[in-house]
Image (cartoon, rainbow, N blue to C red; front, side, top):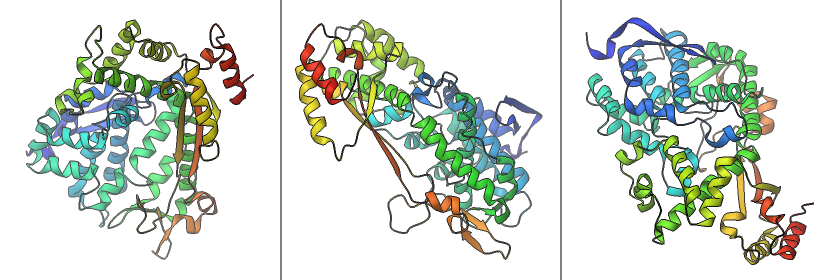
Length: 433
């Protein structure tokens, strides 16, 4: 039997707290899970620094990837199977793309991407197309199969319906991470009726649509996403940890560029510092490696690097105040000068951090990052954009909410063994007690 159709002698299951079980029947999927590139995802947390805010948030990209695969498996094997609009030949491609969609995430992914100008989606495609165990498995299906999987993840595949299952405003990726992140953080915001949404999903030529009768379940999903972003993903304490993490990486890079002699050479960072990251180097990075360096950097000679690493490792995070960059830029400039006088480098100790989210947007041609809307399938078979039918969704459609905060080490501001008057002046401007 050809490899793409091979089934396991006995179905394998992963016990899962969100979906109860993740079912694997295809040999290809089982082989992909066993590759070293996929197993690496066990060593990368799904939510980065969020574990410093919600102590249960220790789940991994591996957990999430299996969850997305399971949702897609249920859609293509149960919901879409036998429907004329669905091409069953795309089944295995959809399952593989779902399983591998986050393969290129690095440790503390978004901070790493910002500091070192990386793109996890590009690395995902590089792993799929490169000299890897994942590529070898996919090639056994067909010579062009890795390319197809990479195109689905890159949103360039010709069958837009397959792309929309994994990447749209109501896709398997979001449906898994909202529920999974809610479960592991212990909050109630991320729960919605996924069973109902799956039952009312219908395939169309270029996207998944939702039966009109399922509109309220979709409203619940969108509000759930809105709440999760502001209550969990953009939590100010998590953002503080992210700020410190980012500053550690910036400092290490700056020291390297200045020729600083590290006590233990940061060999895993060399290609990152040089800006020429090979796939081989990238795949060696995981959060255990990063935490190792943060641990040993606490014994370096550079006081700034030491302080930042101690803060991260011991959760002595920066405090924050609300801040409006557009209106308070003069205040920020004044604070920068005072921080320097107080012996605190404002590049590292006075940080503006912004969070922004657009919970739902309808299609507006020509705009940056055009988003395909969620369509409702009406009883007369017409398609209607969701916000035209839902007052709840209409109320938040196209409305970007942005939040700015100013982060700083309050413990240093209250340490009056030096620069007492300047620190009091800073506290007064920041309206600290």
